[in-house]
Length: 603
Image 1 (spheres, rainbow, N blue to C red):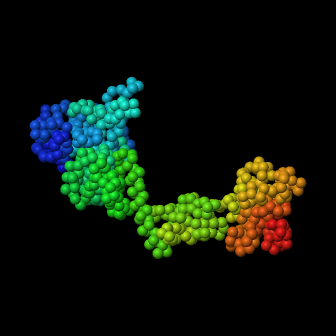
Image 2: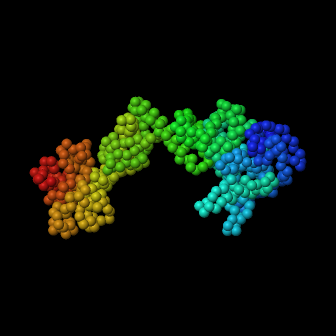
Image 3: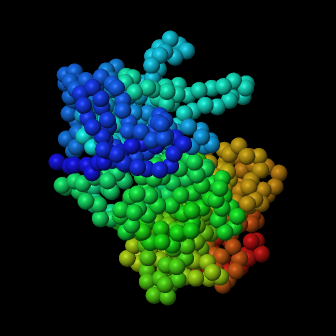
């Protein structure tokens, strides 16, 4: 059974900063609450100091309830034991302001009795239903608040729960004073007043079980609440089954020094365990860094950038954030910067070692010829150029594709080179059969399996459809080029400069052509089934062909037909479009390539 280290204390008034302790005496009609560590009391005394005495009738018997058992409860985490329709009725035992008079806003620390009926864990929250009704005449909705006490409570008997609440008061656009319903209800509570409590809820912020963990806590304002519960268990309590031997590092951001919550408590912890607790405040309106910038929480963290990053890389490190939503971006930026700097240190050593890495393609653009790979080791995404891809066919990558690569440094920039599939395999042999419809220009042309022809507006196009499945004129599917609604042919790389794809002449569309319907069109696609569409050779693409030239054009036979070349099924060319690959894409005859064609002038 866990026991708490507690001391009876006198609590200074809001004008006092001293922290003396005093013995308290408990009697049936006078309850002097034991507090493990002092904090300010809203009540004043003769010399500004007094033992907290609250006359309150506290019931020791709770109504019988049927407790629902969930999987979380079986694991020791109780959730939603009390709900809005049947809340627990607690009583306010203590309510004291813990910010200075010149602080921008009031923050109060309050303790409620639970008689052990609201079992919670460090990092959970409770709901509070304020008295009264809303503008619609209905009871107010509950508000959730992070619990600011350890599971044992401030008095060490597991019969109380504490909150840290800032009073919300502001002026709206109409100049009207607006008061937060629940925050003002709580901050105005007097000892002995009833409080409707729901919960507990939450498991996302639970304290790590590992007593040797590194716990980094980032808080602004009342976001300190869950971390106070962590730290009390770590440093103010003695447990049979838990003794914290790790590192707890708290960063607390506030606007002014008079807004520093629980400052005396945290400083006492630091004195008690200097090797296990680090404390850093960021007071934005009073402190600046060496550049003269306001000291926000991320500014303070930047001063320990390298040390923090080394801790973050450890599996035993946990990072928690709680407070203003606006803090997220600043902290995210500093974390990303830490990761990027580390990546720049890691990559050069990997490049020197010439070791292969693995990653996932984030995106790749075929037209631009480059993309980025996210390394499995983390860090910045790596640039990859099409020329660095090792492939037996068209060199491209797919989003989400797993690849291996070497890391190279060039002009102080890291990039991926010698990109292959897993275990050095060709990237075109990974997973599903990519691009079976062919590829050339943007879509049509070179086929990995089914041969060329083409899909897409720049595609090779053979006969009416070729190896691909789209109109070679507009790139759409569901119709052939002869039925395409486009009034003029696309001159962008396939299909021939605005001429009839059937005969190559101007002034009419293919559907009106007197030459008949048998011819195909479109140059510009890749080879029909793995061969260069220019020379018919294999092992290179047309853009690298030593013979020069290329598809496209329009000429007598409908544009030199993309996709001639060797390989199965594909390509199409001029009026002999129904003939498969292996024919001269210029004249349509077999037995020679286009470079040897006697009718080269037609191209």
